[in-house]
Length: 72
Image: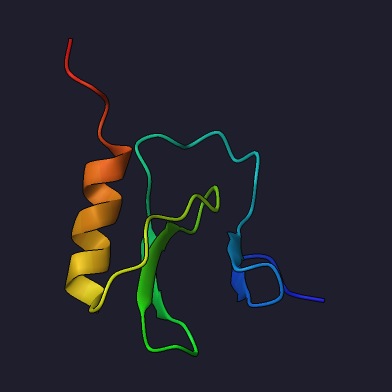
């Protein structure tokens, strides 16, 4: 069992507090390290997680890029 807002290693997903109605824009953002040494950024409000990256800054940038609305 995991607490809300924690990384669930059993399923490899971030479990956040759903339904707060504040997303998007996503925030606050947390970057967490996995046991394999990779990093993933996720929204603490809704639980959306970005792609894994080699370092924490890259994970945050990848999350920001993935959460941007498409132009047009």
